Image (cartoon, rainbow, N blue to C red):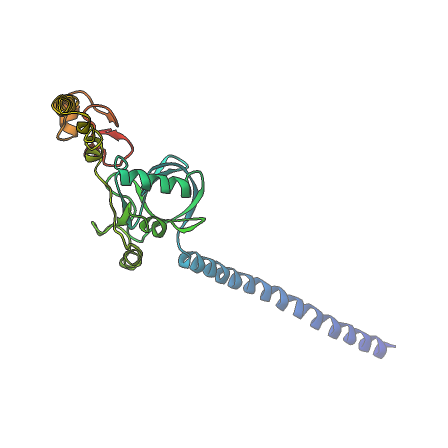
Length: 249
């Protein structure tokens, strides 16, 4: 009887030991494996994010001219790689209308050029994509927009080369002054007495404009007229650097 009891006890003890040992090893293995997987997954996520191009999708709320617009949050964007005619020129009007037709009220994707962020006016310099493709490529095909090569803080050399290949016509902005003065010229054909009064009348409106001329914004501020709005005496495109219709703001 004692022998049977000893054998049964030995078998029971022998069965318990193997059962407890794997549980202990299994617990240890899972504890060490989980942290090893977690950092690896985190590293992969960080590497993927670093490799992905930086870009932001936002909505265009206002178009200032062919290469400048405003997005949600009242943020001004200057398009990398292109230079459209000023908004107060015939070419500028065409550029503004083309930009409005393409992106006004539409979502766009903004992507930065590494090492380039803001211009001296505080506008964000960005590549722009819209539903029709690359915005700069679309605009540079028109005669109102050319590529921008005036500074190093702009599009990359590769982008400039691609735009240059698409820009077959450069840009023609026209002259708003000549287009205004050309209108009265057919009038002399009506009769000979009228040519002399007509130039006199044409000179008369020019006098206030010349008297209200300001060489720079310092002079305009000293005269107490700043800011100047488009159409007001003394307003000129050279004082309106960002082309939003408000000079010396």
